[in-house]
Length: 400
Image (cartoon, rainbow, N blue to C red; front, side):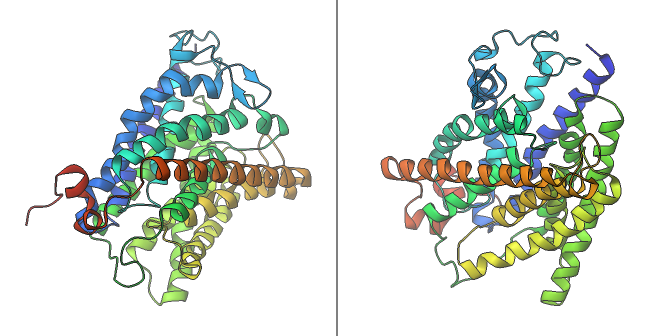
């Protein structure tokens, strides 16, 4: 066990945990005031629900001994054999229990990301059922495929901190949710105006802060690779803010604070798969491109007429896809991409992108359909109109 690495990853795990409340604020500021608490709750509850599922069954399915490249075995069921030493730890320099809890924080935020797609129109109880099954059937297998000894990692796909595992998987599920649940009442006929943009900016700032633990921590050591991931993360986010605002100003005439917050998140998403594989200058290109691409993705939803309430598909889906492919272009640290003489890497990245979208969308769609048939996904129409704060939680966010 390396004490310096252990200290560093303990801090990084705490940073990643802080991202989920940050995401709750980021999302909640963009909905109408009658749904602010329900939206916060959809993210915050994942700290409870997913943490328990992960410790009992999710971790062993993700990082247990490989079974056919598809799933982990049950050797670590209920954290059996996961202790304070490095025995059986996937990171030989870290206590096994520390590696587990660091990965737990990734598992927590991923289903929370999905909730932005169907904000303001899904029953809380249905969300709990969906999220529990999704972590086991989608997140854990994806995590195993990429990081746990599964087929995607063996194939050579590069995903430093979760472009496929976190962002594309959540976006594919978000798209399935949009299509199955349908649009909000009044969508396209009445304005859906964010009720508290300062809250959204605060959430974006917390996400940016926590993302250093997300990406730099994925080096799993307090070393130069972590430093590189930290720097590339920051520069990509900075460039994406500029890229988003530039395209937004050209398209709509003025840059907005919501655009700045969205651009920052888009850059953070885009650099996630590449953070430890690219140089700082490449990170600027990836971030700037991510800002413009994700803005285009958000505009596209109005053309396709699907109601992705808080732009999960446009930002996490397109941003994660661009980041994964850009890794195949710009990788030069520990692996080489197309621009460094290895065109095969770009093809491998493309394969991983397609596999992630197809598997995660298909299983998520089946889950949504099954829950809708046997339990129901949406509250009654009058409850949705009244707001989920009152109808689902008997609370209001504000007293006027």
